[in-house]
Amino acid sequence: RARQPIIAIDGPAGAGKSTVARQLAQQLGLLYLDTGAMYRAFTWYVLSQDCDPADEVAVAELLSKCTIKLTATPSEQTPQPPEVWVNETAVTQAIRTPEVTANVSTIAAQGAVRQALVKQQMQYGLAGGVVADGRDIGTHVFPNAELKIFLTASVEERARRRQRDLAHQGQAIPELADLAQAISERDHKDSTREISPLRQAEDAIEVITDQLTIEGVLDKLSALYQEKVVTAAED
Ligand code: CDP
Ligand code: CDP
Image 1 (cartoon, rainbow, N blue to C red):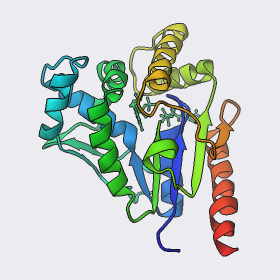
Image 2 (tube, protein in one colour; image 1 turned 30 degrees about the vertical axis):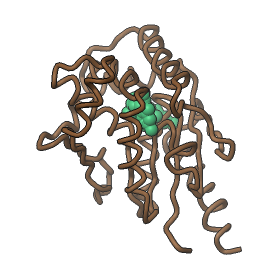
Image 3 (cartoon, rainbow, N blue to C red; image 1 turned 135 degrees about the vertical axis):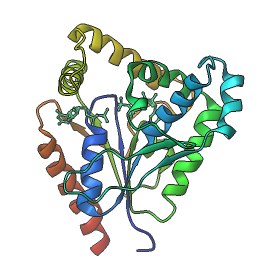
């Protein structure tokens, strides 16, 4: 084949996209591209400049001042999330704060922002060999991806996972109902925006993860990769 395969993983917040995309990339020796981290990094930058996230003109002006870098898939046994840099600042942890999370969907809905970040994402995929996760990967960024997965789970299950994440990090644990509410609001913003909203691509395979462990999801995706990409290429 002319280029290495691309695997696109889309779905709502907390479905398990980044966890399984990262591990699948490592198993297959592909690059992991966390597009959500790019929207979060730019959101962090906008907030750090005291810019109003809803002011589209002011936000767009910041695009040319912000260089986002993601490190490639680390090679350790236990894959860590990629390091994220904005200009000269390491923001790997800073992009996960509640403040960034609360503002990212407002910024990710803006046309100029999406245009700039999608362009950069497409460049990562030029040679193929990428597992990318986000909201519009199969529909917009890599419409020719060899395998498209739509990963999802109920809002309740995704809120429980967030609670567990926060507990592991030793942070205050919000009420389940409040977390579910915040997740639903972000899902709503992401799926109703005008430009490349979150939706399942026609040729994507839906994987519902409520009853699956991370290993269970990985097994399923590996089997789909074998069936849809490896075996298909041999024919
Ligand atoms: O990990 P989590 O599900 O919380 O979110 P994320 O993947 O880090 O993405 C954060 C936000 O970035 C999403 O809620 C979307 O608003 C936006 N995003 C997007 O619009 N398009 C993408 N391809 C990826 C993320
Ligand atoms: O990237 P996305 O927001 O879709 O989800 P994530 O950050 O990969 O996963 C959210 C949390 O759910 C993490 O703590 C995962 O370990 C957990 N998870 C799980 O418990 N069971 C799964 N089948 C998938 C993820």
